[in-house]
Amino acid sequence: MKYRNVLFIFPALVALFALSCERRPLEYPETMEEPAPVKFGLVTKSLGTGEKTFRVALFNMSTKALLGQGTYCSTLIDHSATVTDGRWLSPCRVDNNGGPLKTDGTEASGLVEADTDSKWGLRAGTNGSCYLVAASPAKAMTSAGSQRYYAWTPSTELYVSEAVPVTLSGTWLGGQYVYESSSALELKDRRASITVHIECGELSTAYIQSVTLLNCVTAARWDLVSGFSNANYTTDSYTLFNYTSDNGGNVLQLVKENNDEWNSTLDVFLPSIDYSGSDYAAMRPQIQVLMGNDPAHPSSAIVDITEKADPMMHYTYNLYVSKSDVVITLTAMSWDNGGEHASSDTEEPGKLGTVTIMGWTDGGASNTDNWNTSFD
Image (cartoon, rainbow, N blue to C red):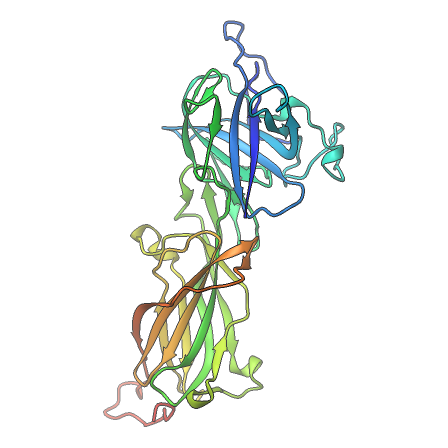
């Protein structure tokens, strides 16, 4: 579902400095003419209903330095009776979390109490080419020198657009009097979600001891111009299943003729990154499955996630266990809204390939024990 609003940039005789919820305007040099207001359309995706706040910013195209920013809310100013396309978002004072503030700087209970003075809107005083970015809610950006980024975590719901190149020239933005961003400035939650599904392939019975997601990114940076950074991130593992805690201490037995299957239930969110590229190779997660009916001697299969993860998409990795390998297919579906899975999914799983099941030896002796009978 998409919602269309029109955002009104209020250029005036001010210059912007480092982000604060207590910004105050400074005068431009007297020789600078007052810029005229600029209007543009803002398409948002899956924000849902209710009151929203937005932050918009302009960045230098070469240095990526912040040129200016402003904050708005979903309250509409409507002059459509006298002005063509005369509907735009109202400027709005917000705190660092994007919550609306009253004129005295205290928390507002809703947008009806918010300070909507025009000084909180984006003000641009220089013509030329730049990048335009929008985000919701209107959270404060974090500084890294002259650059700006948002901290990404699996639990953070933040919708942000790609950086769109625009030209600001008087009342014209991108060569248009009313800038129509279309899908270029679409706000998206920069998370993807993942689940794991396991069933028998060529085996009549499969024994599952544990399923773990390895090397999952737990904190990262979304650069407002460049997207996800491949530096300054942290990783951890998620245990999706362990027989000792999740199956009463008994190894999980899947019987093919009974159509037995196992599905993970833990909500796992990953950065929406193209994991196929070398730039993000170190950030690739892995699915580790330990198998066999003897917990002292598990066999293992490691599945590298090397596919592109699009924002607001849910991915199911289907693992079909055979005697010597695991066949992997992938199913993808879009979110309905805010992380909810689509109500229907008609996509056929795409086969990704196979991985070899690795067993254990006796540590280098001349023979091995026939310890694993789960594939017999």
